[in-house]
Length: 87
Image: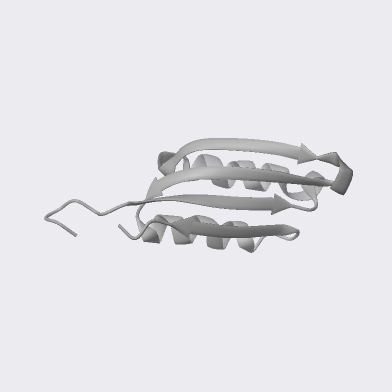
């Protein structure tokens, strides 16, 4: 960190939702809760495989990114992966 400013990292979070009817509302609530670190979002329902895929572009501190991915990953039928820049 430099001074009082918290360093943030740019990154991508990929989310695959296998049980959309059950968890969609919870996923959207979490994304709203962490909206301050979300730069962009793209969601695609992949009907051939009966899943939904969400790609997020994020810019946040590692604590916030970890909290978001951890909460998402604990939801049933939700798989999450992230990739962040070094700084």
